[in-house]
Amino acid sequence: MITAIIQARTGSTRLPNKVLMPLAGKPMITHIIERVKAAKKVEQVVLATTSNAADAALETLAQTLGVGCYRGSEADVLDRFYQAATMYHASVIVRITGDCPVIDPGVIDQTIGLFQSSSYAYVNNFIHRTYPDGLDTEVFTFAALETAWNEARLNSEREHVTPYLYKHPEKFSQAGLVQSPNLSHYRWTVDEAVDLEFITAIYDALYAENPLFDMQTIVAFLETRPDLIALNQHIPSNEGYEKSLREDR
Image (cartoon, rainbow, N blue to C red; front, top):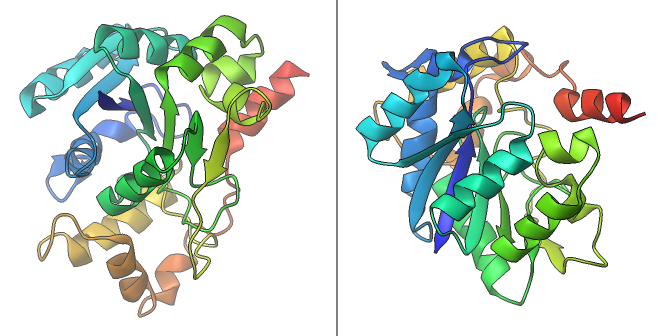
């Protein structure tokens, strides 16, 4: 079963409780779940959160939205994914993170489509980045996840789930989804308060007309608002992963 697992927690260090902050009258994580559910190739959705007491609110929200929930390790997110995938009998896993409130169902389906086009073990749309930061989608087999779960040792490989997969192409057949034009200069993820300000402006402009507004609609809107693009362009990508790499060393 193709299972989208969304990782989320309230204890973000840079913007605490961001997943529950309001966007267009709903918690941010609600929008992410609704967008992932809209992907035609996704057969079930699971929210993977932590066993911390503060994240009970996320479990309740998942139940309200009719999606699965697994609560596990805060630091070992690879284990959290593996246990969630095992619990919900996932044969193929789609990894989505809880900081991507404009995740595009169409891009999810395209990534899954590439995965299904050959006998790949792992596919993503960001190793050769042409999509905006914030539309990141990964698809991999349960067997690949299980191998990583058994073999990954570094903190960066446990905390960020998939580095062991994409660092070992000799073990896992893989491919990357790319597009034209290259839109990698856009930052649509939420790590800082200014990111949330940026995303809020997008939702305020687009949500009422179409709650599932897509990537192209956002690009067309931003072409009229260069001031918004400038808000968060100074923030480097993948700060969390870079921090984990420093801790590895």
